[in-house]
Length: 267
Image (tube, rainbow, N blue to C red; front, side):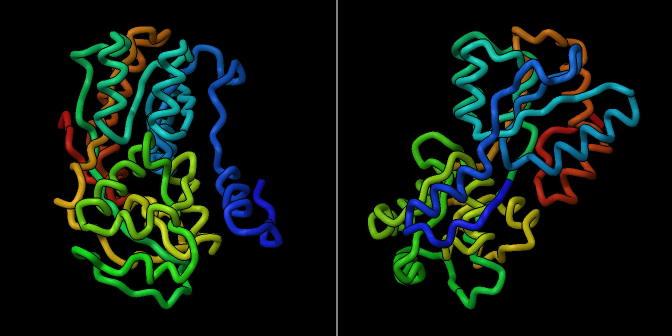
């Protein structure tokens, strides 16, 4: 539940707002026998829609836990009951693959995305993202909302972009780091931060923000969402079937409408 925290100072207020989007680990509350998917937070609306379509066609339940890919990968490593993992970058899928927790031949590059700079919807902020652009000046004493820059994909992509553009050092001490990209988005949507770096699909999903500009694609590693069935899956057959469904025409239409680039298709 969201609440007003404007009376709190600076980063303390930002931390409270960011905490409003923390995603809890999967618990036994999930339906017994349902397919359990761990997915990057940026997939929230679109994967809910695909799951609903899957249920309508098959009658099968899908329980999805959304969070930062790093947090989900760590939970899986510790034995969380997941059947399928969809990461927002290759790093955390590779992490589980090296731990021998992924069914290797099930792994696919599912989706692509883009990185954007966002501001609150009513802000007058304008900018063109290029080498040395005046990001620190644009913040005007406020903070730059980003997902954790050391672990969460959206944060690591964003930091890489700012470093390659030569502006990271000017804003490093002004970054408000959130648990995942949707928590960073929330800071901007609620005008607790004047600017944030999120995926383009996140900006499209939240009417409380506007896109200031898109980051040049060569300023950061390619944004790839890999998906794979997990070796400890309790519902491996359904996980494989759902992964195939994610690559099909119905899911393709849903992903494309949400602004994702589809990288893998079965038909």
